[in-house]
Image (tube, rainbow, N blue to C red; front, side):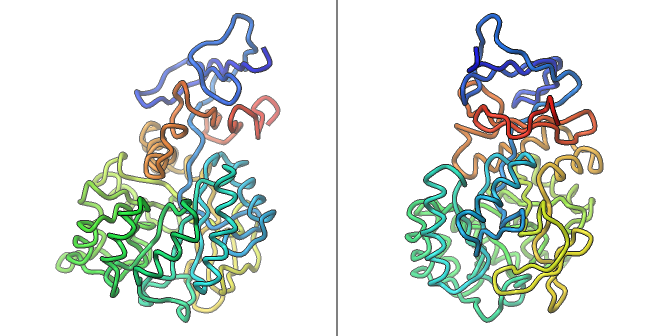
Length: 381
């Protein structure tokens, strides 16, 4: 009986809708369809059961950086986000020297092969100096397909996404290269026009890196990349729902035009997530976190976030008033599909990994299960 758990009495959010007084059965590390008589029951009456969160854009947490930390520090960052419900996380790098990035890709690919992370995301160095955000301008470069290929090869099959300013020389060819190798080409940190963005989408780009942020604003004569990214059904738009990066009306606009099936909530978290205010390094740049908002010491640009996805979920439910099914799509199912792991995670269905988040009636995180084991036990939290 020890291999079985019956999570009973909760509101269960499934792909088909919400089941009241539902139950999820866990056998070993998987969700199953039935349990033997007498299997242990965990009473979760009044709670919500949702799939573990999937974060496809995350730079670290718990005081640890995915870009520069040791293996143990990276694992500390991963564990920090697991405690906040993110059971699947991609490690994102900020801009660095090419040799440094290839070395880091080789190191972290081992963690991906071990299942600790879900792959690697290179946010830079192939981005626009006009929209650099918290990236070191001296290290930026045009997206030469040969260099893009070098990063992919260094990741040993674990590269999941590369963010590009596709209007730069080599951008379109790099998008085609990424698409051919099954790596997501994401449009971001870009100064592209509407027409240039359409060209990149036609070449194979499928994601908008933190829509609205680090790109030209929406204009009525020069609509820019935002309009192109929102209107095209081939694009999934990342949104940082922390109340700092986006006005609620901008989030509502994205959901209205893209629909919940084309939105992915991300954290874009840096070291301070789950850790606290203070001074940190983001790549080569110094960041000050004050009142949980991260900004560059030089220039005052927003420098990632301190967001965790449990907070993004609660804000979406209580401030944005989004349907729970739409939130689950954005925070679990859609990123899982993009990463090619929806057969294992992203929904509460038999046969999938038992990755589950438990929320109370006010959408506070109360329990986290990963592969059948409680990371945060809802009966003691």
